[in-house]
Image (cartoon, rainbow, N blue to C red; front, side, top):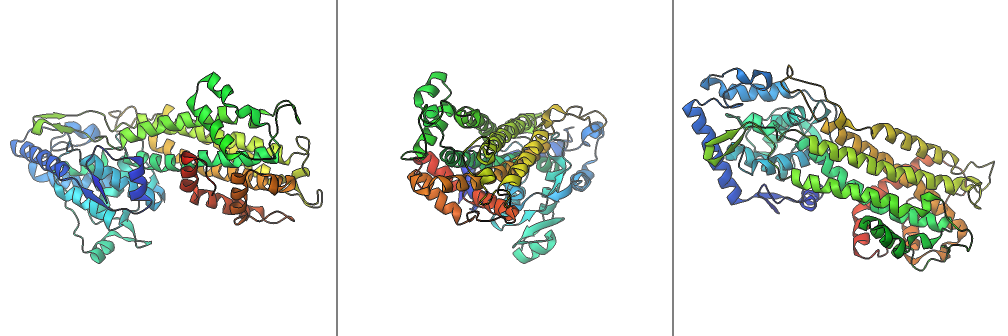
Length: 507
């Protein structure tokens, strides 16, 4: 069980809670801060002090005063009116992550919600009741208003949720689990939806997948190197130390470890003087992607422990400040950066695929076909990879450079961070399929070269991968092979990540 306190949540813990199903508890010290913050809000209501979102309207309506008897309806109206999300729902694990991140933010004690709110969110997590949240409709400032409104609906017993593997009405799930809906009080609706938890939740899941995929790309490209009898000298530590990028040197070191003992790699001058860039520059290109992923991780680790609603309450209610912590620009830029990093992993992978299948670039059977001409082999798999890479180029266009004013120009600059995060997720899926295609082609190439000549580590990877995709003896529906390989890579991501981080041990 993970104890939440609002300031020390890690990406590893998010992985354990949201992907492995670990339960959560609330730090007593954090609950004390929540209670103190709530007392401040109740005093503000009693004193009839004018504070945004407590006794005023929202956005352009911030100057409209709300009677004290209507502050309850104000919050309910806010959630219902802002639940304007459209399109396909976020995957259930992303919805779970949103609930977790919103709970963690409220536990910082700056938001003025009652204990019932944080306890309600914790119950959703521990009972595995996850709001159905449409993916589209957020501008990324004032936070993820539309997605988080659908999250708040669940606390109110409204909307729909994932429960026990099915989608049902929230009221039905609550009856089954014996939960009472929360009746929102002053500021609580605003505290629930003013935040960046949709883009950040997608961002965290993106990072976990992207990092694992980047590590997998080293294993796959190592098999490609063997299939093309690549020159190992390009991975010599002296070259990479001379440049000074640690991530580049780390990639080269991991690939040297993976290929240790291979009889398929060559030395410079043995078969050719230099390899093409897509082989020779793997450490430089992959290393740069790892640099970007390190940046993204740093920003996500800050954001998952950030207070992002508005206004924030300090000094026991003596200081209540309206600000802009809900603005998603830091995550928007991080997600755009991630898009480029992952798109490049796919881009260079597609070039390696071309070298594996093009008879003008290697001495392997044309398109790795068992009967060139009669059998097309991997010819159209390269087409597919090229299509996915081209699609990634359009998705990689930065969402964060766009802004459309909203709320009658009161909210005149927005981040589009959730769009950036969603597009990053799409790029990751495309990139995984490209790497799946490279993996299939590389397996065929080393088969022609001689499996017994492979490095011990790549040879065991080969045998594991062959359980997923059989060798190509004749043409078949390769779509199924690509999807099966991509699913296998997705499922083995953490295992491969652990291997690389330890010592590159065999599967």
